[in-house]
Length: 219
Image (cartoon, rainbow, N blue to C red):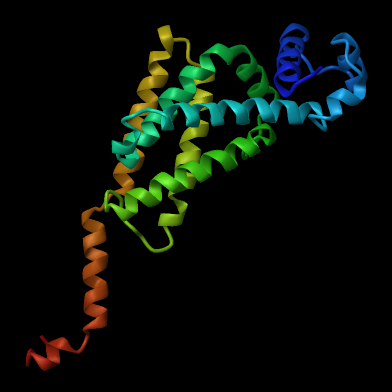
């Protein structure tokens, strides 16, 4: 009896051995001694299998980090760092597949194979970012706050491509890229002197007639 996991495993073994997707579901099913319709009970295409592998790795990462006792005590920044470190640590055991999949699906935007992963990631990112805004760890900027999650997704894509090309021992350069990138990104999300300037400008606009009332004339 086939399962989601068994089909994923067989698919990964096939593409890493042959360097390409099976010619057809029939060929794949026959090789793995299962009826063709058994495959379609779980997936509609080989691309859907690849998407599920990436999505499951993301969900597994989230389950693991959220299960840590210290998770609730983390700041938004620390939660983001925890995700990135944990995801790429988990990805090490699937490196050959990850390299194959990303190189096969390179595109200017988000590769189709990562679309379900992007949705999962952005839901996670939006959650921790909203927490950060509520605790005032992060600045709530009109129009821009809703784009914070997009900046984190861009960083995810950057780190993924960096990791694929990283030949340092233990991928230590990737760890450095994660740390520096997440910290810089969250520094931009935090309150800055520019936010104070905007707030002051809003105050002046709202209280524009104050100087006349104070008798300052045209000062």
